[in-house]
Image (spheres, rainbow, N blue to C red):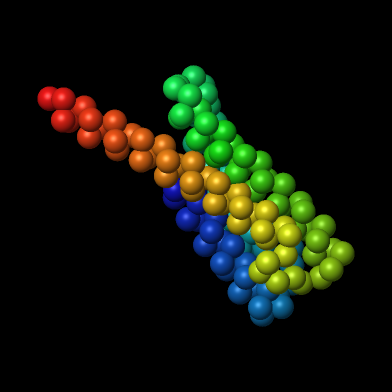
Length: 130
């Protein structure tokens, strides 16, 4: 999932450059293809682990809900961004659709970091018990 986030975030940074250079905005631009490739990777990994994600202990389940919420925000940010550009033209970094995308990225990262932290702590406890 982290690789997907990095790909998506890189595409977002590239898209900012496109906005600064006033490049024509299209859903099928190169930066958007990188953004949505990364998102597709995140969603695919989450979907493969779906049953496990929600059958584990309560704290893991809570973190997976955080990740799922981030995915939903990212998926809604695309159409929101497109309609925003149609109505207002090129926008700045802190437009509502971009903030929605950034919030989604942040939630996915936080959920993954919390799960990783829990797994590392579990491993340390098991190692100390030996």
